[in-house]
Amino acid sequence: MIPIKRGDHFEWGGQFFAPDGSVQSFAGWSISSQVRNSSGCLVEQLAATWIDATQGLYSIESAGTTGWPTGRLSLDVQIIDLSGRPFSSNTEYINVIKDITHG
Image (cartoon, rainbow, N blue to C red; front, side, top):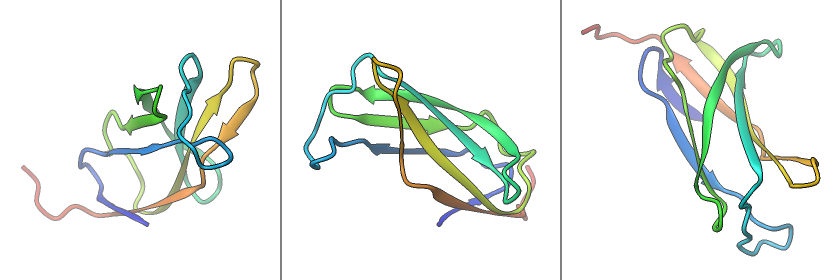
């Protein structure tokens, strides 16, 4: 579970691999990511970018978590190959808690 306080900056990253576990180039593939609540409602479309598509390295980032509800949210990252076939990462969970200090 990924912990975050509501209102804080959220940035997270990872790496996609080929089905056999080897490093693969994903150059030209599109990438996207969303955060959803437990009912499946969209909380935010995250900014998803390739850090190094030839190595499968990506980053996702929120424009701002001030409006995120507290509690457990879920996210995944979806990539789409050059033929239009989607592939998704494992679902990750975010635990959003109330911020105490306000600046």
